[in-house]
Length: 191
Image (cartoon, rainbow, N blue to C red; front, side):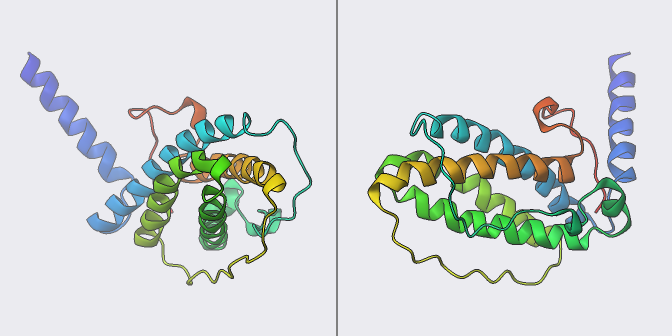
C-alpha cells in the first residue's frame, strides 16, 4: 500500500511540475530558481530590515538613486499575464541598483548587517539573468560621500526599502503573500 501511495504521489508531482513548466527544462529550472531566490531574498531582507531599525530610531527624507516602481511599469496581475517583459526589466534594473546601494551601505561600520542580504540579492539577480532575457542594466555609481552621522539613516532607509521591494518580487515570481509561503507551498508561476 505504501508503494502504491508513493507511486501516486510521485506521478502527481511530475504532472504538477510539467503543467507549469515553460518550454525547455533548463528554463524551467532557472525560473524555478527565481521563484525560490525571490522568497529567500524576502526572508533575509525582512530580518535585515528589522535589525536595521535598531541602528537608528530616526528616519529621514533621503535622496536615493533607486528608482521606484510605478503603475506604468505594468506589474499588475493582468499585465503580467499578457506581457510581463516591461515589469521584469524594471524589476531587474531596480534590483541591480539595490545591489549597488547595499554594497555601499555595507561598507559603513555601523551597517555591517547589510552583508547578510548581499548573497541573496546576488543570487536573485543571477537567477533572473538565467531565466529572463532583458537588456543590460546600466548603473552609474553614486560617488557622493556620506557623512558619518548620515550613515545610520541611509543604512536603515536602504534596507527597509529593499525589504519592501522584496515583497513585490516575491509576489510577482512566487504568487501570493510571501509571508505565508513555506518551502512546500510555493506555487508555479508562468512568465
